[in-house]
Length: 394
Image (cartoon, rainbow, N blue to C red; front, side):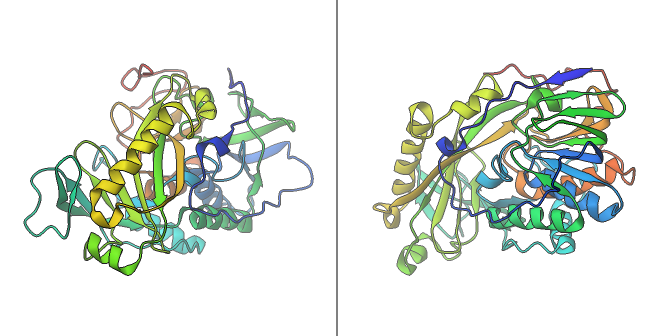
C-alpha cells in the first residue's frame, strides 16, 4: 500500500542559527543505488546511529541513509544538547539503562562529542531544598528540588561523529534526498528524486516530519521548540549564578525552563513551543516573526530577570528546532503500521539526545533480528492502527 508525503523544501534558516557546527562531508557512490538491504530515512541522531550500527553488525549488507536536507538539519542539530536517561514519561518497562547504552554506543563507534555526565538539576518554584546551590528569581523564587543522572554533549560534534562512524563502517549517506513516496510491498519501494530504491528493511527516523511516511500522522503533535544562547559569561558572572554553573537544569513545574553552559562559557536557555496543525507548516515558521518571535522575546526578558548577573547579557543565538510530543509522553518505537519489515522510531518529547542514539542502535539490532522491540508499545499488526495515541492537532 503506497504512502506519499508531498515534499516542499524546508526553509531551515528561518529557524535561526544554533551554536553548533556540523562538520561532515558525505561520500556516497557515484550512482544512486537501486537496491539496499537496509534503508534508513532521516539523518538525525536516531538514523545516523542506526546506520552506523547496522553497517558495523552486518558488514556485508548494503546500508543506505536518505536525508531530505543535510544531516542534523532537524531536531538533532538544533537541540540544546542536554542528556537525560529517563523518558518524558519516566522509567518504562524494558527500557534498560539509557545513559550506559548511549555511552557504550559512542565508545564503540569512537564518537567524541564532549560528553559530560555531571548530573542534572531539577528545579522548581516551590519546595526548594534548603541547601539549594542557587536561588534565582522567576515568577517568584526558583531553586533546586532534586537531581537526576545526565549531563551534556556538543550536538554538532555528536551529529558529525555519528555520520563519520556510519560512513566509515560502510553506510552510504545521501543528503538532499527526500523520500517522496513509499510502497509497502515486499520488498519496500522508496521513491526519491534520484530514482526508486528497493529495500528489504526500512527504519523511519524523521521525528516531527514526514509523518505519513512513518505512519505517525495523527498520533504525535509536531511543534517548534525555542532557545537562546548568551555571549560567554565572565568568571564573576558564572560564580554569581551558583557553585556548579556547568550542571544543566530543567524545571519540574511551570512555566517550563531548561538550560546549560557551553564550553566557551555562553549559557543556553530554552522555553516555548509553537504548535502547528500539519508538520509541513514547520517549514514556514520564522523565529523572527509572529508567535515564535514573541516567545523568544519573552524568553530573553525572563533570562535577564533570573539574576542580576544576567541583566545586561547579550544574546548571540536565537533558534528553534522541530520536535514532536505524544499524549502518553512515551517515545515511539514500533513496527510500521503498514509493514512488518519497517520500524518507526522517534517522538522523544524533548528527552531525545541519549535516547535517540540508544534507540538507533536498538532499532538496528531489531531489524537484524537480534533484539525484540520495546515492551511499552502496543502489539500492533501491520495494517492496523491503534487508537491509544491518536492526537487531535492543536
